[in-house]
Length: 357
Image 1 (cartoon, rainbow, N blue to C red):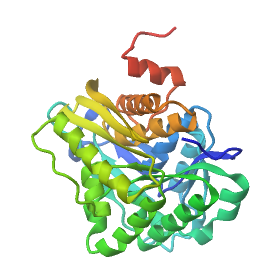
Image 2 (image 1 turned 120 degrees about the horizontal axis):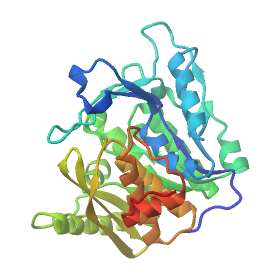
Image 3 (image 1 turned 90 degrees about the horizontal axis):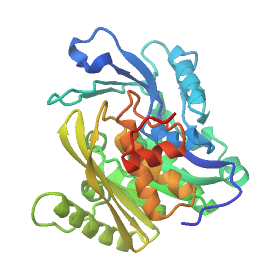
Image 4 (image 1 turned 180 degrees about the horizontal axis):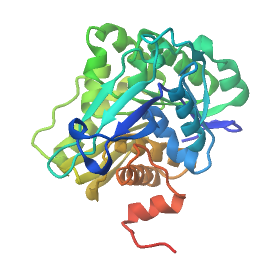
C-alpha cells in the first residue's frame, strides 16, 4: 500500500483521553481498596507501537482546564512519545466537564474481567474541527495515516461531525484513512439514522476497514452471508463473505481485517486474526496465549498492523505484527503495547520467550 511521502506525522487520531483505574494483583473492583491509574483511550492505544518504535504520532483531543487529571494525561502522553493538540476547556464548575473514567479489573481463572465506563460530562464530547488547524496538519505538516474509531465518531453529534471533517480532509490531501468500526449499541441507541450516515460516509473514503461481521452489519447496514456450522472455520468463511460484499460497496477500502479470539479462561485466550490485503487473504490461526490483562488487545492488533503498513512491510508481516502487538499487550497491566524494540514483536510472534541478555 503506497502512502503519502514527506510527512511530519506517520499516524494521527482524534480521541477522548481519560484514565483507567485497575485493582492490583487481579482483584475484582467491588472488593478492592487500592487501584493503579493510567491515562488511556482506545485510539491512543493504536498509536503506541508506532510511537514506541520511533515514528511520529499525534492525538487530537481536549483537556479540562486546570484539572490535575488533565496534567496527568498530558504527562503520560509525553512519556509515551505521543504528541497532543487540543483546547483546554473550562470545567464550568464541579458539575461541568471532566475526563472519562474507565474502571476495570483483569479477572482471574473462570472469573472474567469486568469493565465499567463512567463517561458523564466527558470533555471529549466537545471535539470539533474549529479547534484545530487542519490546513496546517494535512497540507503543511502532512499525515501518512489518519486513524478513526467508531467510538469517537459515535460519542456525540459534535464528534461525529469532527470525524467526518477529518476523513474528508485526509482523503482530499492524500492521507490514508483507517477506520475501526467499533460498534457499541449503547452509543447508537435512538441515533441509528444519524450515525449510519456518518459511518457510511467515513467508510466510503476509508483505505483500511477494521471490524467483525457484526460491526459491518450493525454500523454499515451490510446484510452479509450467513455461514453454516460452528467454530473457527465457519467464522472465517462468514468474515470472508462479508468482506466480499463490503469491498463491492466500499471499493476505496484496500485492506479489511478483524481479530479472532476464543476465551479459554481469564488467563488464557486463543488469539488469531484474518486480513484481506487487495485481493489476497491472510489468516493467523488462533494460538494459545497467556493473559495478564486482556483489555487493549484488539487496539494493539490494529497498532501492530498499522505500524507494519507504515514501515512498508508485506501483508503477511503486517498481520504478524498485529498478532504480536495484541499478544504483547495482554502480558502487561496497561491496555497498550510498549515494545522495547521491533525485535521483541518478532520474538513474540515466533513464540520465543527465552531470556535476551
